[in-house]
Image 1: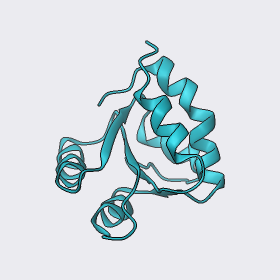
Image 2: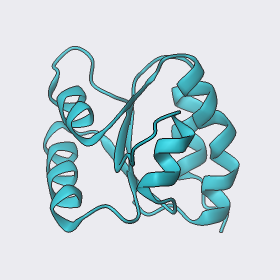
Image 3: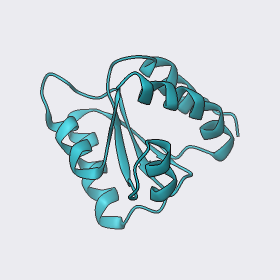
Length: 113
């Protein structure tokens, strides 16, 4: 599901709260591992708008297979990396089922724009 800018802006404070709660796993490889894990299935995955076609396919296929919600957000990999305190770009991040994850998923699903 593609998220509009207004909706993402409204969800951003909750996303940062999820990060503080330790409920975010940034990075494509770590996100794919989190989706594959049987017991710790993420609540959702966010994907950068500028992610490569290969990354979009890999993450999209894994999320579809394991039944994890996928949200393509209007932010670049560099912006997402900065949100999570990383120096390098971050094309994907898994949101674990801890902290305010339910509020975040609800806000990302909202149609504000």
